[in-house]
Each structure stands twice: as C-alpha cells, then as structure tokens.
Length: 320
Image (tube, rainbow, N blue to C red; front, top):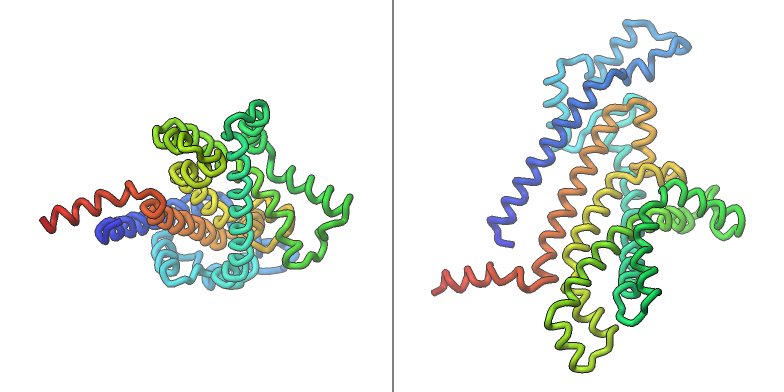
C-alpha cells in the first residue's frame, strides 16, 4: 500500500466515523424515552421539576439538538463522551474500565476460533477421508445455528454445576475467561470454516498444487505449506470483521456470564436508557471495525506476493 493509498484509507475511516456518529446521535435522540426522567423521575426520590431541570442543565441535555451534536462530536475527538445519566460517572472512565475485559475476551475467542477453523478445515479438505470429510464440511452449518446464550447456559450447567471444573461464582481471572471464550468461539469458527473450505477448494484446483503433489509431497505438507497460505485472504477478512464485532461488545455472552465488559455495559445502558453510554459504545465499535479493516488491508501484501507487484512495477516504470 502506497502512502497515497494509506492517506486515502485514513480519510475514508474518518468519514465512516463521522457518518456513524451522526446516524447514531440522531437515532438515539429520536427515541421516545427520556434518560433523565427514567433515572430521576421516580416520585419516591421526591425531586421537584426545578431540581430535574437543574439536572438536565448540568448534563447539557437541555440545549438545542445541534448544539448537543457538535458538543458530542468535539468530545468524541478529545476522548470526552459526557457523563452517564444513570450513575453520573464519566463515560470515558466507564469505557476505560470495561474495554480491557472485552479486548481480552475478544483476543482469546478469535484465537481459539482460528485454531478450531484450521483443524476442521484440514479434516474437511484432506483427500481420502470420505464420510469423515463430509461430516466436517457439514459441521459449520450446525455450529452457526447454535444460539450463543444456549451455548453459555449449557457450558455453565456442564462444567460448573455438574463437573465442578470451572467456578462461575467469584471465578479467578483465568476461570472467568474459559467458558465465555468457548461460548464465543463456536459460532465465530463457523463462518471462518465455511470461507476457508470454499477458498481451499478453489486453490486445490490450481495447477501448482498438482505439481507439488506430483513431486511426492505429503498431503499435510501441501495443505499447511502451499494451499493454506494461498487461501487465507478471504478468511483473514472474515476474522477481522468478527474481531471488530467482539470489540464492539459481546452483549449476550457477557450478560450471561456477568463479565464487566462493553457487552454487559450495553445491556445495562439499554435497560436504563443511558444515551451517552450507548453513543460511546457505538463509536467504539465503529472505530474497532475501521482499525481492524485497515490492519487487514495492510496484511494482504504480506500474505500474497501477487498484491505487491503493481506497486513494484510502477516503481520500475518510474525509474525507466
């Protein structure tokens, strides 16, 4: 990727974030719910209308919509997302506390999903396995159909309540990762397997694979050293999208396991109508997608030398 192309991608990324912020802000503003009244309108609190109006003024929600829009936009670029209408704490502080938990879960889940996808794909595409290969080819359709909350509940019932291997109440940092990682990796591995199988089937039909096989190379050597590298680009794109989705918040999984991450925070913000928190999470998710997609684009020439040739040819032409 040339400097000009990189600058163009950065410009596109900024535009995507601006559009995302604009759409999210006006959609959340159009909701009939009132976060301030939801939090402070309870008669049991005994607040007067004047006191509620003072709270609105302190939070800045009494200002004109466009003023709130540009104030929030400036805050997004400066890292200040306002204050939570539910707790009063700074949203940036809440995000800083929750984001590391979600990032760790996302990295572990995508790593396990990639390992599972590679092993299943190897068995599904290995010549001569017959019914075993057919079974593994049909496995992704079954995996993707399993609801995340059902997988989580099943794992809790089996490994925590029945076998007692993993504590679900007050677990250690490692124990708290095991079951959520397994829960997320199952549906994540399914699309990776599907994309990899399709790409590998196309690569296996290419002449260079037959040439390597004719030299006496084993099927394992051909798969791991020749076929896989030439089939990784579509799966890499899919893995980037899945990772961006996880960073945005695994709502169901983190809610089931009670993890203090972005997903759990999203569920709480929806139930409490906490608009500033919701807007911040939407922007964090969009930023994650943009960054991951940019990294994936930068990795393409590393994995496939054919993508480096246009740039090399243009340099040679300029020198000539």
